Image 1 (cartoon, rainbow over the protein chains, first blue to last red):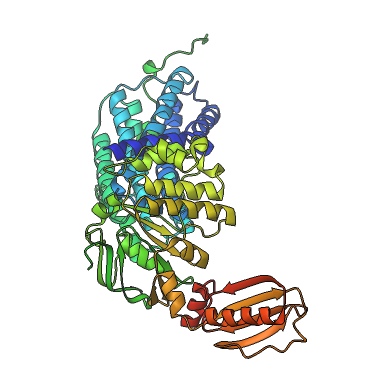
Image 2: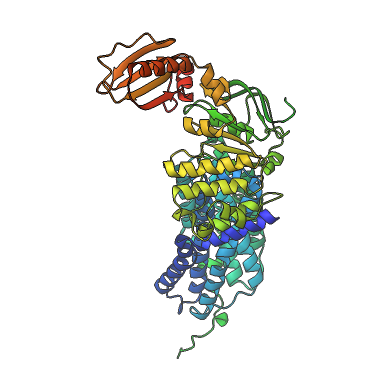
Length: 299
Length: 309
């Protein structure tokens, strides 16, 4: 336990000393948030505030998971830092746990900050299920960090890792409905988006931000994300490599598919039930106007 | 296995795909000794040491370290040994005292970080980030971290490679201190002077095999190389007729005619005869050198290679 606590403590300290971490966790989401708020007139267009918040959260969670956890783990292996840990009696467990906890501790203030700004600046009503939302976002964060750790485990070099991260990051961002509204997708793209993990993150966050009632999609999404987190953690432990010289077989990259399997199953189920056209009111529909707080200076 | 053997290795082999890096070696390291593995790059030293540290599995053979099997009892073994790796790093922004506290937390017992940092002359740098340390300071920190669990056995894998001579000297002093504390040290190096100065016993490795083993003195004595005797006189020697020295292989007058160099298989006897001759000739002796074969000479003789090839 002492090792876990020390690793978490030092991981958080080190992260806070990195300008790039501060920038991507706090400054970039803020800049993005205000830019999108302005572009979509979030202060005056009902529904846009929640849409902008969803975009900012998804962007942050994907970045924290794939770049924060994945790329950083590869960097530490390439720089022979993990090799120094290897000669001590600790296993990969405390290292992975520290990475998870650090990611959560660093990112959660950003979420709270964006929620508060959405409320006070964009007049978005507070979500009815704030605690559920924070738990859901935490699960998503852990889940995407687990995917990042699996990528780190199967990538032999930084170059390979960057390619794998980019291959997952952009489809997850563009096809999830976070950046391009799902209503703009054609039927085939909509089917495809049902197989993408971040789609369920978007659906879950949207539903929690804009609906007053819990919905099955939140629990379904949370379930898939939890399974992904567990599978990702297990695979990450199993394939963990301390040294850059320890290469992994090409076939091991299929473990990434194993981590994404829950979404493959949900996607198949959604496609079979012709659910891609399900109302996704979070992204595309306005929330009830009565919930919008009037601007303080509104006439 | 000898009763006070801390490390015991029998018929140890390690292969990487088609490459056989270690080809069936046997040796023991006794408690309290500094044992050197000497050899050029690619000799199999690091593979051997990393097997013993529990970092990589052996292909075949037997190995026991502090009574543990490095393959099967890795965690127990790692808790008891100290390791200073050849190629390693720490996060750039970690501070010296943080690194010590972090690594101390991994072990079941640990020494005071403060005392270790003071001892390794890093106390003034305790708040400095790792990235700001010099090469020598980083190596001292690596040694401090290797000592953090108060290990009975230390593995030092080329601890001075790439460091300048002054820092190398500092590291040598530290290793001598460890030896005087009664710790057992397994040291790999390709620096001859390091092995000669620090090691109680040395195993010379080449192409995955141990080609010679013993104290540096024993190895030098086993050598067929000749000792070199060199005398410098105030007068010119070229005009004098030099006798056939006993046990000498060759002799020559060099350096403006004032230096006589003689190669001998029995330097004491030859030197005695040379001194008699100098006295008989009424020559004034200005300087005298006797150079015995070094481990490098032994290594070259055994392998036909130089250590830094």
